[in-house]
Length: 368
Image 1 (cartoon, rainbow, N blue to C red):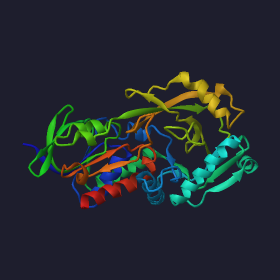
Image 2: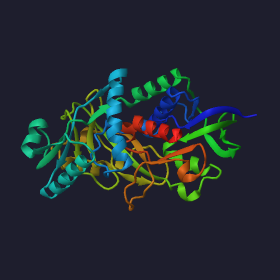
Image 3: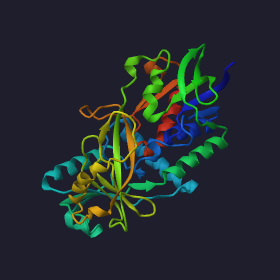
Image 4: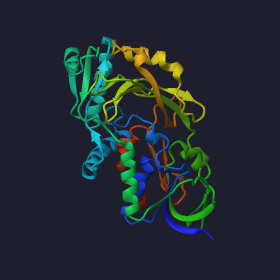
């Protein structure tokens, strides 16, 4: 006979753990099922670890609203839980006169999203802040930063477990079907089990569409086709010439090959955008020359020999390379008709920044 659990969260990435924490602290009985052997092994640990300000996203979109709100929640959380982070700031640079109009559009969009602290800089002003930069103008985002994503996830997990939640590793979901007033969740692994749940949150990241497709009664047209956009990263050996993040103007599918820093100050470049057919985390070293070309646009002094293959991440896209940019999808029973089910699709960047706000949004869905 299947055991009963009030709420099953599928996926132990940063968003799944944030949801588990919020639900457990709200009094729900929660079990997180994760197919891998550890937390955050996919998108959550293979990104730039940036705390985004909410600059780029379409006004009124979930990405924009949840990023701006989530950033406030995240910084407060890190301050009160001693999770390491730094508001090091970011420069968005226009390398040519043609890109000045793009900077203007970015600044306008940021204002519409409620980000009012961007500072416009001339090329000389930007170089006084980062002497190695080549640009004709820039935008300074003082509210952008970096966070230790693993420590953040460990904190979410610890608080969820302290509130009674459990995390089951090596537990892939193989199917979900309706069962009376609830949902019967089939969980594989070494000891396959069935769990009867009142609520299921599909926060499986890259695998969320395949989990949704295995749900009995889930309308097929509401399950997006998954697209995988790999982002390769190259690490700069030796001392970083930059003290802030440096971004070129955005490119289709991503934010351009930018400079990010870890909390120890090491510089890394990426991610680029490489559309692939299946999940593959190998770094495509053949892309090094185009990395170097992109970097030299704003850092002409780059020594290509200092670039080493770092790691790769994959964005959980629900829109292909020739389609309009996606938004976050938080899909409740009012949309798909499966009582007790919430699907999360396309939670790519700024999902890390927005994780606590996404969790609050899911709690609100369940309370409805």
